[in-house]
Image 1: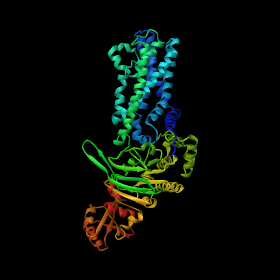
Image 2: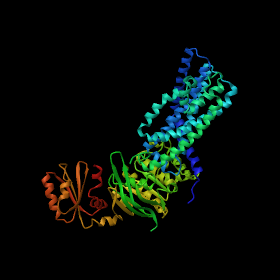
Image 3: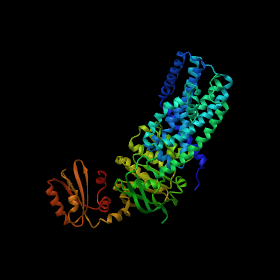
Length: 272
Length: 325
């Protein structure tokens, strides 16, 4: 019997799984409030903190760029890493698993669909807050910063794929795990302050999260005077390394999950 | 016989920290290509475990299973192109999608080209009387419409073997009939297609299946055509007795000399007992037990055996009774 090639199925799966998220964005418009207005409030609150402390102008830029990348981190945690857990409860996961597609393609589809909303949120925060508070960026660094941003997002979504299978092993605790990770990650990634402030050891631990070094590199590129954590080129090399590392680990982890799931019925089946 | 599904000494054990539960215990099955094969059994009998192994979602603990000639353990990737499964009470997909969008999405996981997939979806929606709901959101469907949509999901990819796990559970009579009609029609289109169906509904199995296997406590206790199974109780007298509510009688009735099997189901406040008697003479003993219980007889009929009666005889109790625990 001839079947569509694995590559074709992989690509079609990505598009098909992204589709409900695209559709959801115009059929359920509450996201306009939750993905733009609310994050703006949070970012602006931090701007006022720095203003009250008479911090240098570039600190406002730290907050804006942190707010931009925060959007993608939240997407990875809530719309990707925990998604298999919800899909299992609904019975979707067993249908995904018994289709001749791959779970990685399903996850990439989720990520692509979710990234659209995150991008909207990120662009809103970037433009609105920068204009409102007169945040200035170095124009010569914008293109390289865009490149680093893309690398960082790739590394982040590879980590998301890894977390998706890890979270599934945690069963009902996935939600709590995501919740528990939230604040430490905000802190360790330096969303609202330069990572160098944390010192070499804590900053080094925080660097396991792709956002940390990516965000620091972007800041170095477009906010001159950013305290350097490690040299820019090493940060870029590390982010590329994280893409490879998390891509490989996520594939190993998903394969392991698929194998274990066939042994342990509870992993992907709705109920047995 | 050209074999679509074969299992050999199939066994599956679920292990928890404190115990081991044997869900399947040496199941041997041979299902021919083109058959509509029913798997009957009470809750916990192992039906769903059997299906999950055959659709490659679970590994057997031991034994072997082949579907469409492929080993479910080692050749599962190829096999997944050839099969589909639809379960009763499915709530899969995404509520904000339209029916046709959801069906298209699932077709893409099999790599179907978009336009043929859309044409096939339109054709199946028409056949199942869902054309008007094609643009309706999934969240707005009734349970009957939703189950028809689920059936279409299973049929879009033209599987060689379709697994239906309690496909009409909780459906109204009309929706259940539509689902059964479509299964028959789909089978009639191509003689090489095979359906494997698990069900609680004896009438459904009797009406739809060419052959059935009765599973109890992980073992196949009987298999054959519905008529062959009914013949097993042909020599028995089947008596239905309706009694007012009262103290538990089932065990006492089973002890009566000449009672080969007994089951009870409560309906509209009345206990409906079905008794398999090896001879009419056993009825005297039954009546003495009933009179002694003080329960009022609301009805009593002798009738022809059904598949349910065969089930009672083979399993020792009725399906509904098992469900109530």
